Image 1 (cartoon, rainbow, N blue to C red):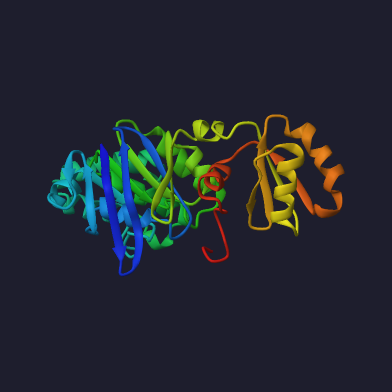
Image 2: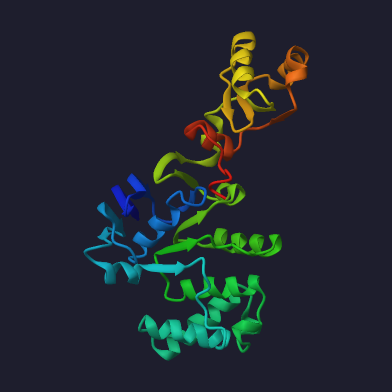
Length: 304
């Protein structure tokens, strides 16, 4: 349903997307995971026909987004990170306006709007001005608006930004209930990426990993040990020599995977106790996948 082929986009001298090739199947929930500046929003804007790529090709539903933007837009429902509702209009008025933009007649729009508002749990707020709603309720209305015209593809850019945990959970409960709609979600939150069928990890414009979250984590094997130290380079080298582990330096920590990490940690503590500030043990996460593929942390001071 979505395909990119060696997609490149530059902002002056900065390359936001670098030879990005990706395929997303129909009805799939797909997460684009990456830190700020990784290229997520640039790809989102290209697929939404708001930005023309420097080179390469992007398709939605078999249609080139540059050659056939109007036809592509008819396939899309889009929920931007920035609010797209008119706060001075009521919930129902916002949806009626959306229906008019897509050429729906009034009766059809009213029927669809009532059904969508019921589905996202805000039917009882239809007559209220949007500006009086909480952030979570506004996000639900955004989803209803994006799905009003029955799109084949739903694009969501950081859909839970600014929401409390309960509102975030409600948004994802609704997204999981969608049938027959391809969902592409950009996010910098690991737990949101975990909720999708597949995830593509972006870093500095490159697609560094793609697959099911469980499969990507399983590729690392064993458990992850993270050691805090003032001597990252020296400790990483000594760990490799003494315990035959593939230790990597990540900021002020040393990380490695091991099949029996719980038994190994006490031996490491005994051998290098004075050089160790902290030790953490856990199952591999998508952040560990990111570190393994890029050699650096997901978040750094510069990225933040």
